[in-house]
Length: 213
Image (cartoon, rainbow, N blue to C red):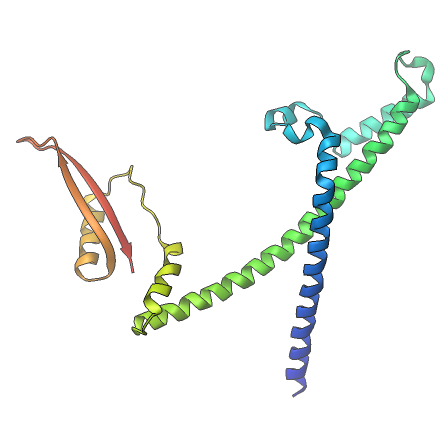
């Protein structure tokens, strides 16, 4: 009795946590969407950077950022050695602004990782639920329950593999598919077209659209 109650409380707790998580996700998504355009405008060309353009730019990993900080410290402590057009105060202010954006990226990466973990766990749960529905309809279709066949077929399309027409099937594959059709183990059709026939044989075009049941 105690074990059942504990499981029940655990299930309720998980449900409550998911409800809170969902409300937070909606709230965060709305906030991020409201700020996305502002960030895009601030970045000017940032939103339109191509992959090649990004490769030509220097990122700010640990090593590069350390170099930037050290160079700015040297410039601040030794202004006499710096070019006259280099404003040390502007450098320091710009670095503080850059650090805010850098921290924002780190936070968003952590948020994305956490959200991705939750998403894949929930995705796995819902996919298994869908498989249970599929399996139930498959069993009912086999037992010829009225109305189950079209419902099962609507889901079965997600598991059919499309064959590439550019690769002609081999004779061995054709033999296997013909046997499947004859014995009712597959559905579909096999079409053989003879193009430009000659005494020595023409060019054959084979369309093999056989799907296993």
